[in-house]
Length: 87
Image (cartoon, rainbow, N blue to C red; front, side, top):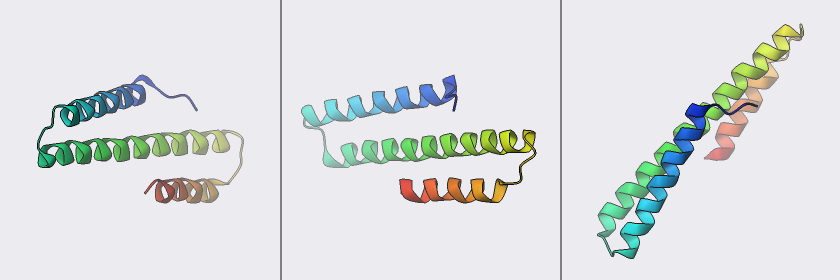
């Protein structure tokens, strides 16, 4: 799968969030503020997972259709399983 710039930028932003959270911890910031940022990072990761899985699903469906195969049901099941596993 080709990971486009949008996907990579999302991960870079998450990386920045995590560095910021670590800095907050090192500075002894309030628990509430740290938890808020951890929650935001988790949400960003969840959205990134969804983007990667959906992009991969679209790519796989297009490839199977181009080859004349009819395996889309199986591809959708696999995508759903990936999403479930990520939770």
